[in-house]
Image 1 (spheres, rainbow, N blue to C red):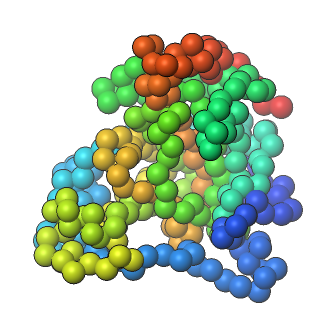
Image 2: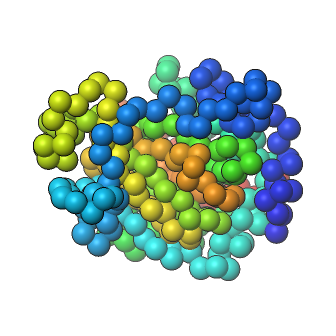
Length: 287
């Protein structure tokens, strides 16, 4: 298996654009940006997968139900993780934003113009087929048919992170599935404190919240675990991986399904059928 140092040496430049940055470009600018322009944190919680609730980090009340998160620990075996990482490192890692590297297996998409085409898409990687079949054993993932797999490589030496964001909902469907590899990490969910107050989250501590304040819920991602975001966690809460939560090389694979617009009965059902036929052929092999 390729070491983290060897893998990191494959990238000679970063892929940052606009306000994005990583350690590679910050060193050139002689600047150091820890996590960009973050909002002030009003309240911090941990996600408790047993209670399915957000619990105060300081142990004090209040806590509140946090629906839309499924954590499947030990989804991968150690041998499966080793094989997956080995297979990923046989493919080319391309520079991406904020110190990440990526491999995309999916259609070509222009989200601004809302256009999608097959392009050179050959299907999801062959090694992913048994993982997708295993996912379907979980009731919340019944009928899950991914049409895209995005592999991301995070490394502390590059200051890798991903800013708080909501995934597109025009093309991508209800469930976002991520498999976490090589190291533990934390996914940070965030919501403006004013919205949290409207949802009656956080109790009186969210009163008089400023426009730049937010509530955060930290979701622990153990090594070899699978995470599903759906419902409120998918559509209302932004999610991020902060630089400080990447202590070692981390690989993840995110699988996305089609939205109802591209499913049977939707206005672009025919396009969706073609995309699924290619994706679920699992015909991609390492180049």
